[in-house]
Length: 356
Image (cartoon, rainbow, N blue to C red; front, side, top):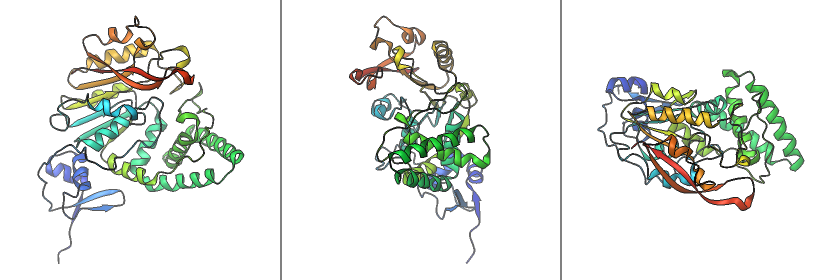
């Protein structure tokens, strides 16, 4: 019996004239006979034929991948609304997805769970977040092993022990990210997730020196190591291009087949609402204007952007209405806090801005 010869997913993509990500999707869905995994890579029989295109949406997916970190302003609660504003051509004429300020990636994972995209590009200015995405994609087993240790150490301690352990790991994370290397990339990613799951409100905030300074949260039984979700996320991220950079890096990727989603730091509704510093530099009104002008310049792609609605506080504040004049400005309801006081939590409007 002749032994099968195998080629890489990248070689199969070149052979069949489709994207590397598309080959990964076909492998994951068992649509190529006799495919196999070599470590974390798919390999394909060299004589395999390109499957017929049966591209469909996947709304019936029973156990979708979810974000592996918490994030201030995350879009998990708004997904059912945001999904209604996706371009009508998603999965047909729109076969590329781009998210240049990815954060926790709630919309990213909704798109990956729902549609078969040929190419996916994500980036973020937070290099430690991007390192964590890369670790989840490329080395889930190593990441899970470290997170399992962190979870065991954390949960087995009393309150004082947990506090001491948390601040020791925070110090280690700050020390490690001062000298980032390939050798400490998995440790940095594991520390990033551990701190995210145990810090106050899952915030990522740094001081002017770029050091993570969020205090410990008060969670009784935090899930630090969600091994199943990390493994599934790793599969879903195969073939996704992941870059550290600001939002302008999308220019190298987009065309008329692309859907781009921008989720920037929101413009604060009140002075007390601006409680995080995502990076050492804040995102002010000048930055919002630069982003708005950039978004309006992306005429070839389908573009959606989220932001706060100033009308929640001042109906005469037309900052975004004026900035995005000529685009479609949709006001949608969301559960948010407009400041740190619990009595001001509840339904407010957010903006979904589209050029289609």
